[in-house]
Length: 217
Image (cartoon, rainbow, N blue to C red):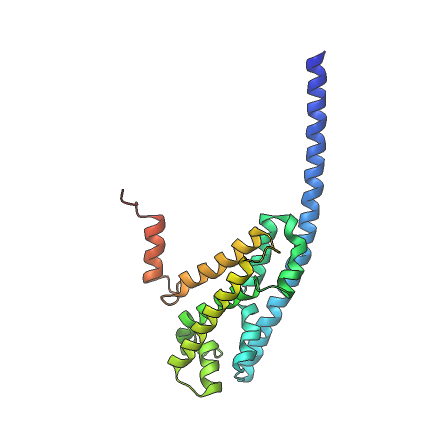
């Protein structure tokens, strides 16, 4: 009799847990759809802006380029999506992260600037729009070397801002770690050139050595 009673209670608890999990999953998916739809809208608008510059033969100022390019790189939507996957409980923090914090903006900016440093030469050869280096060179009338140094300085300053945010306890550790790891990954991929488009050189060697080659003991 006791065994039967225990089995009944266990079955009831399991059914309630399934119902609760199913309802939670529906809520998460609903929130995810709304947030991702908004991020896709923002990303597409940024790409449309770049398309207008390209087909109109327009050279944006450095500030105009940066204002749009930190979004068009696509990191923002990725960060939002991964945060959702990691922890639904931090969804309410997104508006503050986007508006009052550097944790989404700075990693996206580092990703964009690192990408520009590593890929802009090849992109200019295929007649793409001016990137950060070229925009700064044209606007300020300086050498490419000085422009590249300016971009590197912006990356350094962005890391300082991220470190300041890390010391701030307002936001979840999940958001903090995802943000700084996004910036780290971007610099690792592009520090020796185009680590994505060409898949050759130092970046490829680092990936192969980390994943495929045995670690000597």
